[in-house]
Length: 581
Image (cartoon, rainbow, N blue to C red; front, side):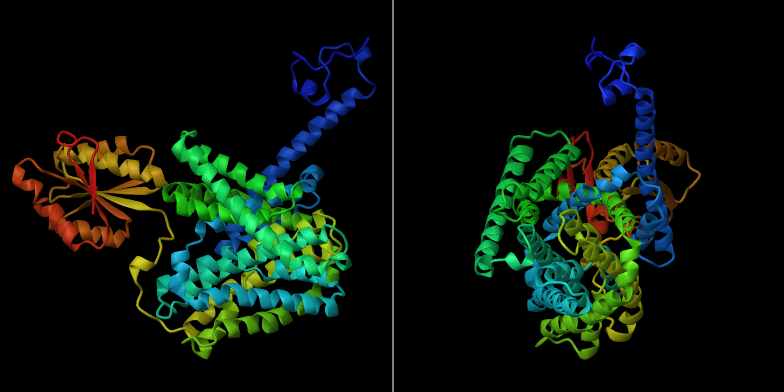
């Protein structure tokens, strides 16, 4: 007789082992109960590993952020501490998980490219996007032959890993400088932001090309005469494949309406992007990395609203992928290799930063109106490395590239040294090296949650205003501040209005506020004081002449407010309509 095969059997043991749990023990292979216990233990170890990664990674990262360090440093330290705790199966899948993180990074980079913004920054931003990264990558390749004894191919691969800049550190730092006014007159923070985004695109492309070359054999077997042709072919086909992918997504998600919500849109886009990254392993004629970035870029051009929804979805995915990425980087790090390379690695990083990137900074700002102090600020301004290094630092080792252990160790060392140092030096030297200009509030993006001010009275129109504010807040996961201007805070209508707001905004973070004073002036003052994104208020129009004259209060708010105003009409007059100014 043969054991009962997996068919209508129930129980997780049958799913794992393929045997019916009620089969006679005499029919089961010897040692099967021990195998079941081992499988249970492995499942629990895997679940516990994910709990350690996500839980400890988040909290230790937040602790590091409150101590003034980038959260990613705390996540890497968690990974180092959990090396003996995490499941071996999970560590073995670290390379595949990094590939998923790379895909998310590439999509966010493509969806964030804005060619109009690049054109406004001029040649300085474009040069900052190419020259510092390229010069540092070449310097790393040259120095690695002398300091580490690597060959040219592996040295250039290491240069592409080390030369990339970290948006996880640079973007928050530059946005903070813009909000404070440091360097805004000459657009220095914007130039650094644009340059760092472009440099990551350049080095990710170079990394993918070199990885495909080195994966075909040793570095000495590279046929340099075919290098320009292959690079050009992979770039052109990568852009073309990305464009076709964007067309397919727009057709499925917008024209054919295959999805019912933004979550399904993000899921489909993520599957397509991951497929483009994996496809070159079967059909190695185009750059999968470039195809994914092109996919995001062309989505912005073909359908802006779809690209905005996908950008929000991939930002949410990155909040989880970031923790997994940096914790697994620390868990995969060989401390013995890192210890043996510590002094030589620090020497390599220092010389490549000062010589290679320094030359690139000087060439990038040549002929610009930046003075020597502003040029010197580039040293701390965009030296931080983290995200790209964590995402691609372990790929050469997973692919079996000679020197992969060295690349991973130096990638981790560059993160642990430059990320906290760059974040700290940026805030320290900005007041010393940059000039403070006038802050333009229209050019400074909101770094906190989106919030709406719903100005309501005790009329029936208050319900329409609250429903509109609630709908807007749900779309962007925002907050609502309900403002009622009255000279009688204990009036009968106030409590009814408070209960109405509680009922309509029960699933939204909101605050009910009372204020007194001139109606329009008070609304504008509270909106500016609370730094809301939009003002939502009612528009009355019961007589024909009021269709031209909006109304005394709403007209005054429109004329005096620098914050966008959304006017909601009474549902009895024009159902479901709202006017925005």
